[in-house]
Image 1: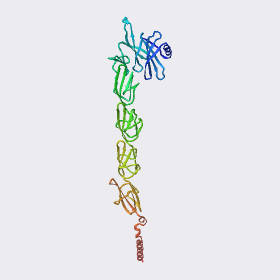
Image 2: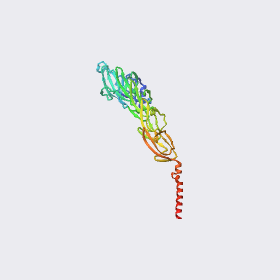
Image 3: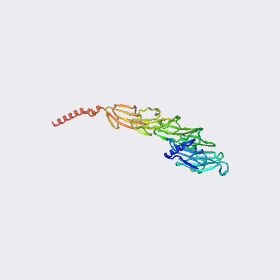
Length: 435
């Protein structure tokens, strides 16, 4: 085989252009992969009319020629097939007829394989035979006929048929030459990124290969049966739905409750994740005993306090309470707490002048009588106040009220006149005795 190196760098490009001007190039096909564009066909010499096969290699980014390679065996060479193998390696198949060898007066069809690598085209294999079926996928080359064939790798070593796994994570990219259909539709490239079930068919004249794969969805931002206390975002490809409604990847999910996230794809693919977003609750904690006035904040869809809808505001009534927070999907979260009884205006064993005014947040009795949440006590004497929590006495206060008259006019003052007259009488008695 005679290898003609027509282009390498700028100088070789000029030489090649001169030779191309002297000959005719007939393009028969093209192949594009990973930023490289291959054009192949026949080259006919002006001098002797013989044909050779050629391959031109282009950079797809700027359309510049990287290499143009013309090759023949001294006879008429015809381009047959171009196969992409490992990255940067191409196998080019050509064929030629040897005639009148050893005066046998018959033609032999010889198939030749050339490996293009590192700007060079090297003959690696040739064989005579009726080869008419060629295929290339999975970076392997098939050479055969309608009855049988052989698979080769990039080193032209005999190997087995390309193996394709059934399940892939997130994407599937597959190399092939010829034609391909994905789920019945013809495609130019097999580069699948959407989760789903796929039927893939690759064919060329006399060859067909069919296989099935599944691309699994792996969303980020959520886990199966995950529990979250903050809003979250889910990122995923595919036809997405949240609780039966369309969902845009990356959108914030704010509403508390039980959620169902779905990914749908080709081939009736469906995968679901279930997760929970808990509502936040500020102001109380489960089982907490609280004193004073409290206010509750929550982002639940609805909140009830002791079986009544709670729209916010202060909670002051002493006793056991239950908050229920509601969310989507039948979500409920129950939180129990107590507000302890408290009184303002009175303290234990205190003495008050004239009156005392008290406020309290619970059921209470004063000297055995039920009173409301506010009372003005003016009755003189010792009093007893009971504060109740859930039906039981929680705390007792004893205090006394005295009047201004009692303070300004003590009891003994009413006997003062009698004492005065008694002293006068005693004085007279002592005076008479001295006489």
